[in-house]
Length: 156
Image (tube, rainbow, N blue to C red; front, top):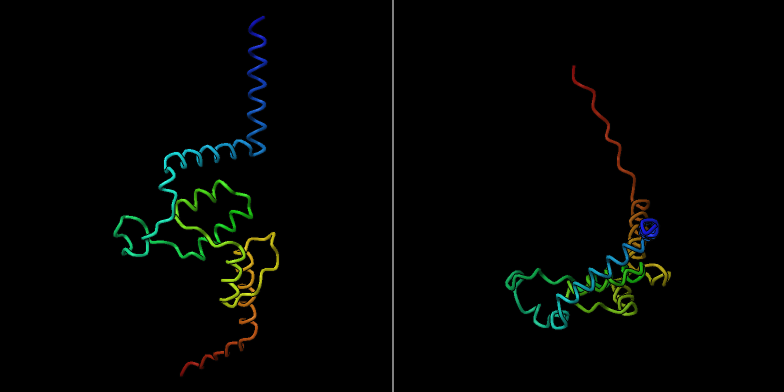
């Protein structure tokens, strides 16, 4: 009889594991574990932004060149909107930069001539890409159609 409760417990564990996997909860747990390991390995001192990153030539310190702040901020915003907090944390530690706030990023983009954001629910990168596609399609529709090239008849 001791065998029966053990088998039931195994079945229950298997069913719970299957349901957690199907719902994506196990993936979230794995992400949290990876982020916790990453935080533990880095330590607090390594998580601070590099103050002197711009004073050295790229590759001199063995580190990759620093990414532009606007791009880091756009990616950070996408991860925030998609509710990928752990991924965002790891990304920001790897870039060693503090991204612009969403308001600051909106102001930067407006200064570059992009239209103001349409929705706060949508990532700014999506809105930038949509604006670029719209501008591209306007340019294509406004341009003159290509001239038709007529082939000359061969000489006889």
